[in-house]
Amino acid sequence: MFYVSAIQKTSPSHFGTPLQQKVYSALEALKIPFERVNTDEAITMEDCTTIEAKLAMRMVKTLFLCNRQKTAFYLFITVGDKPFHSKKFSAALDVARVSFAPSELMQTMLGTNIGAATVFSSLLDTENNVQIVFDRDVLLNEWYGCSDGTTTGYMKVRTEDIYGKFLPFTNHIPVTVEVQYGDL
Image 1 (spheres, rainbow, N blue to C red):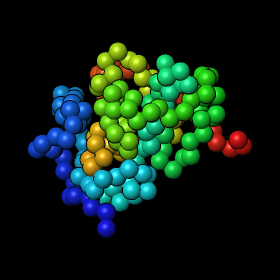
Image 2 (cartoon, one colour):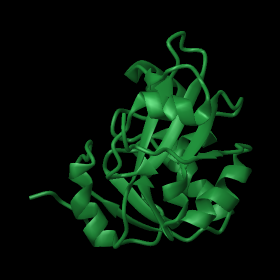
Image 3 (cartoon, rainbow, N blue to C red):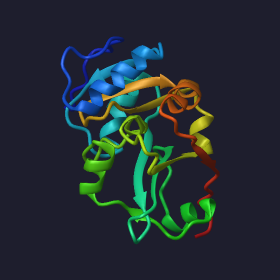
Image 4 (cartoon, helix red, strand yellow):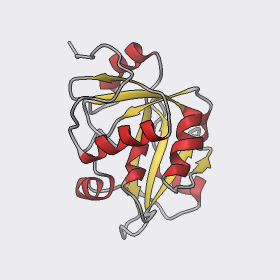
């Protein structure tokens, strides 16, 4: 059975990564309330169903993408049950076709491992090398469920706090797209 702790509303007593520590420091500085849980290692969206039930919200899907030359980077945040199609994403942004960025770039640029991609990595992207891209569907939800920068810590935050308080704090101006996945 997949382990999910009781809900907590305070920062962890110890941090697994430097990013995780920065996340909770930023949320405290911005006075952004959150609920969080500790879990077994969660890598896939399927792993997140128990977390979603515990926190009474839907988890976002966060994808780290790049162009072929690895010179343009995107953190695409969409709803968890929406399939991803590179062609449709690229068309919505009017950019060259993208693919998943290599795991080593994920670690060096975002400070996370596979499965832990998060909007909170914008805290580490001080030179704005990564464009934050929201699927409009995410912004329709009251709650934003995501990783705290680890594969064992997940949280629930108001979507408006992420978009309206947190991202301006990191000096990132997100782009919002409407990605339709009808006929491919």
